[in-house]
Length: 135
Image 1 (cartoon, rainbow, N blue to C red):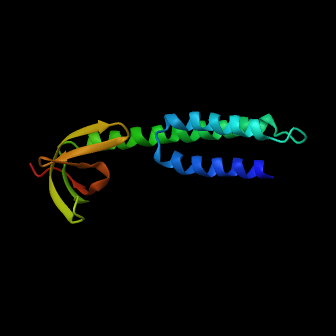
Image 2 (cartoon, rainbow, N blue to C red):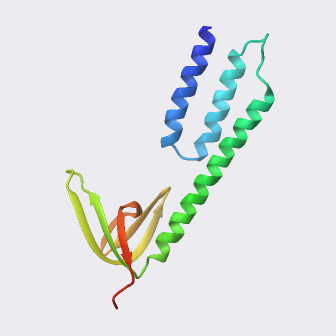
Image 3 (tube, one colour):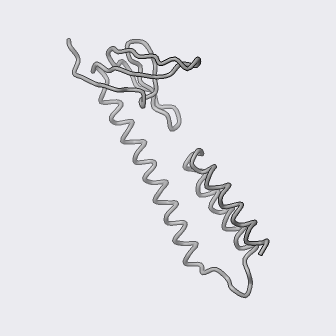
C-alpha cells in the first residue's frame, strides 16, 4: 500500500515539472517513472507491458505536436517582417507597455520567439494586431 503512494507521488511531481520543461526531457522523465514503477510493482499483479508502450506513444505524440506548434509559430512570425504590428506587454514593474511599428526582425531562442518592432524586441505572444505596411 505504501508502495503505491510512493509511485503516485512521483507521477504527480513529474507531471508538474514536465509542463514547464523542454520537450527533450519528457522521454527521460518517462523512463524514470517507468523504472520506479517496475521497481515497486506488485510481483503477484504485474502491469502489462502494453500499457507502457501506449504511454510512450502518447509522450512521443505530444512531443511531436509541440515541435510542430513551435515551427508554425516561427513561420508565422517570419511572415510578419515588413508589416505594421502593435504589441502589449508588461514591464518588470508591472506596468502595461504598448507600442507599434514595423516588424524588423525575428529571433528564435530555444522555445521562445522574439520579434523586433520599431526597435523594441518583444515576445511573439505580445503582438495584438498586424496590418500591411503603409509604405
